[in-house]
Structure formats: C-alpha cells, structure tokens
Length: 223
Image (cartoon, rainbow, N blue to C red; front, side, top):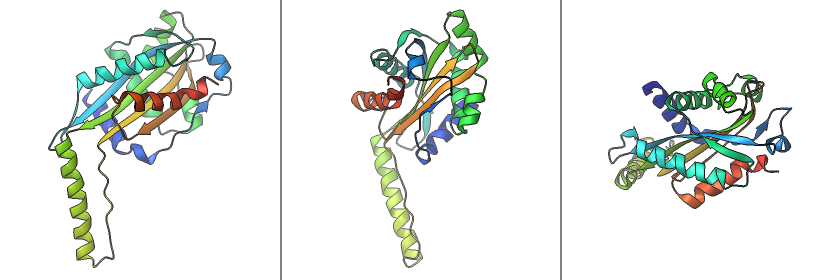
C-alpha cells in the first residue's frame, strides 16, 4: 500500500495539469447504461496535510469520503441498481487501475483489461456493468496553508529582487483538492466502457460542491 499511496500523491500533485473529457467505448452509450449498473465501492484516498505540511492518508476522512460519494451516486438519478462493497484487495486493484489509466490515451484506456478481482466480483454478483468511482482528496491545516502562501510570496519576491525583476516565480498553495474518477467496467468483454474525471479545489467532504462536481462528472451517463 505504501507504493500505491505514493503514486496517488504524485497524481494529486500533478492533478491540475489535466483536463476532463468523457470517453465512451464505441459499443457503449447512455442508453446502454440505462440497462443498469452496480456501484463498485466507491474507493477513496483522502490526504491530510498538517501544520508542517507533512502528508498522511487519513483513514477516517477516506471512509467519510467513500460513504458520501456512495450516497450521492445512488441518489443521482443514475441507473445504478445497488451498491457492491469492495474488500481491501479489490480497493487496491481499483485504485491502482485508475492510477494506471488516468493519463493514457482513449485507445489505451478502452483496450486495457479490467482488474481480475473486479471482473470476478461482477461475475459473482451476476452483473455485466459496474460503475467504479474513485476519489483522491486533500485537506490541510489552516496554519500550514497560511505558512505555505506566505512562503510562496516570499520566494517570489526574493527571486524578483535578486534578478532585478527579470525572473519571477508564481507559486500555488492549494487549501484543498477533490479529484473524482468514474469508470464503467464490462465483465463480458473485460474492457472499460466509459471513463471520465473531474478535479476541483475544495475538500471532497464539502457536500454541495462535491455533489455538483459528481453531477457534472456523470451527466453523460444520464443523457
């Protein structure tokens, strides 16, 4: 899990360099989705940055994030018939899979075999389609955030001073982060049928903002 956490943190650091685009497999559409899917998970990794900007994964915040997303998805007007909980192995496979495909091209995403554990789970549940939701989030200590903002300002001012204004540094300090990924898995073809993600600068536990984020993320599955 330690390696997986480092991968997730790297994705969090680089997150705002990407843009969101919904992707469908050629043989899958919102009409197909309306035939019914089960919700897999959700899975979540919620990082907490303390006053010294040390990052740890907070299990309690991660669990709260999972339950909040589950409640939102099942009340979102999606054709989700029920929720299927993931065990620890399935959670790890789900997170590692999304970490692998999230920066790949559409062709790679749609041709990548789905995780074995999730494929077996869908087959055991007698379901063809599963909606996999993963959230990587970040919350931070307010004092730590204030210090980071001040540090960025001072670094920028020092660079400008010593280079006589010929160079400047624009630093960013994020107070919170919410990146949500949605993938529809097909147990019959063992492939991805739908992929989308959306990232915003707020905590995943800010209910209305996260609801709006999720609504925007999944709207193409409800058309």
